Image (cartoon, rainbow, N blue to C red; front, side, top):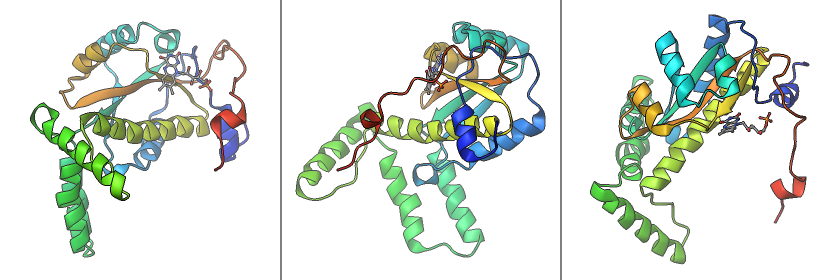
Length: 233
Ligand SMILES: Cc1cc2nc3c(=O)[nH]c(=O)nc-3n(C[C@H](O)[C@H](O)[C@H](O)COP(=O)(O)O)c2cc1C
């Protein structure tokens, strides 16, 4: 593998068979640091990386992921969680940090203090969310209007940011000479129970992590034609 960014991107593949070599703590730490720097909506950083260490939890997690080949052989399994309610403490943290740096502006207090809470609130039975959504849709007929979100919009939004962080983590692993397999194939309810997640958190994906084994890649990369993925207007 070369070491340019593009070599790293091209050599990342989803690995279905891992060598038993453990992932060194310093490698994992650098990759987590990279993942933490990913962009996120309103800088809310809604992700949480749960490193599955205990053998009991690992055995259960393998089952939750249907003992897929990637999961079973990986020396390390990580759950990437998306949180819908950590925006409160993050907003506070951002405002406190800006204040501590002596650069807090009124517009920022308004943004994280008033605007963000409205974005992330959908109210009992989701009614406030529906109202917001309808108001936003009507407004959009008249002028460009932000997406005034209901619960499912918020859910999509936090999963977007979390997946970007997970992608950064996977590319960082590749840059360190390690591999991964992202997994959507898991039981979401059992995954939540295993990780002790409440109503407002979901597993975005599991990541099997390690070094690729000899039968790691099933076939050469298959890409759809470029014009299915890219167009200009
Ligand atoms: C969100 C997501 C979920 C995925 N879930 C699974 C999975 O459950 N099991 C699996 O073997 N591969 C899974 N994959 C891997 C894809 O099959 C793989 O990325 C795709 O076939 C392209 O291959 P490549 O990653 O080697 O380029 C997932 C990928 C993503 C991004």
